[in-house]
Length: 246
Image 1 (spheres, rainbow, N blue to C red):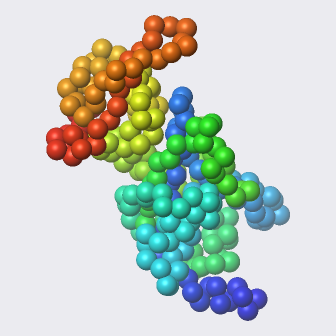
Image 2 (image 1 turned 180 degrees about the vertical axis):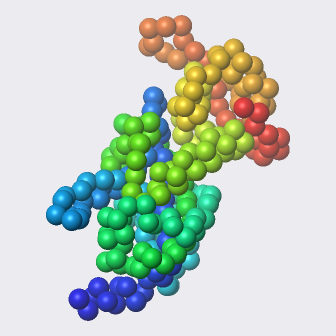
Image 3 (image 1 turned 60 degrees about the vertical axis):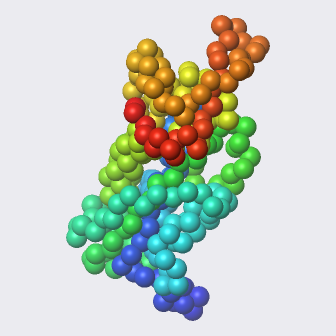
């Protein structure tokens, strides 16, 4: 009890961080969610929530978000973008069991401001060994997520909209691709994140107008179809032109 008391004294009970961690695999976009198990009014509930925590009094917002991600995945120095602050008076009062769950650590009748972050990482099969997820943390396909605890479904949707806008205006796609990639891989990445199919001809016309995506004198090998040419992203050229036109 003394340890719990000391822990609560070190928490800012009115400010929290929530992290929307997107995990990209070719063919699907995932999100990292926490399984929450609790007893309420004689029933057992199992639902999902975003990873998050109250901010400690000795850390700033970015440090708190990085801590949450590190504790859940074992990954450090992952880029996190702050994209929203949510402080609606009734945001935590959607369901009675959410209120009950919060009473152990905070005062749910008071306003808690959440600062939201998103991160995008590659969880392709050959990189899976780099992740050490906590037992209650799992990847879920984004299209399968319909309901979350608190107002987290709204926070997730805001993050997805921000990610899609950033994909059109910032070079985040190339951090998920290998150094050499085909235009088919680049298009598939955009389709997975945007959640819609793109016209192949129009897509390639747009890529042709991007001076920072250059062909490599190399093609695919050992494939059953016509080998595709590889391309590469040149960040220095991008910095000079600084324009994405998707």
